[in-house]
Image (cartoon, rainbow, N blue to C red; front, side):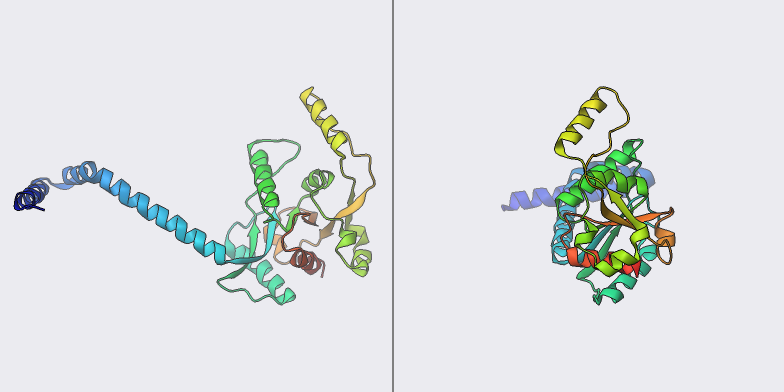
Length: 250
């Protein structure tokens, strides 16, 4: 940099200082905002990108040993979820730390009979979680269970739970038949024709869900009865998903 350029920069710097000294209060703040806004925007953008990258790197190191979705739940804060998380971790012999977690998402609200904005948004989120393998267990009202069970969302509990546990909870089992692709297509066509009610699937009814007692931590997390538990067919942590249902039935 030449001496002339150096003097020019010093001159502009002193001129900026002089202007700031003359301005007072709101006028000074407004000048700083207007003059330095592009620079601040760039700096904030860089900070935001760095923060996002750091969060992604941190999250990529976390081992989520179980992911639970509570539909139409309450208790969005971590404090209300801790008793359920810690109780299950102790039951399953899982050590939770900075890099090992049990995830509970109780932010989704659904009413399959309404299909309002909240329902559509929650359905989209459930679909994304299921598709990415980040949904292991769902706790939900009966109406939500029936909707998803008919659409092949859940494991047949006969295939994952011990026979003696199935027998002990036979009165709480929820049986549903699944739609075939042809039946789903027919329902879609009827909905397009303005028919509101859908036909029931004609297949065999199997136990895709089980009622769990609304006690302990579930009193605060599930403000409804009955509470139905089901294991997702796309569960990435299938073993822990089954253990979680067993824990709720314990």
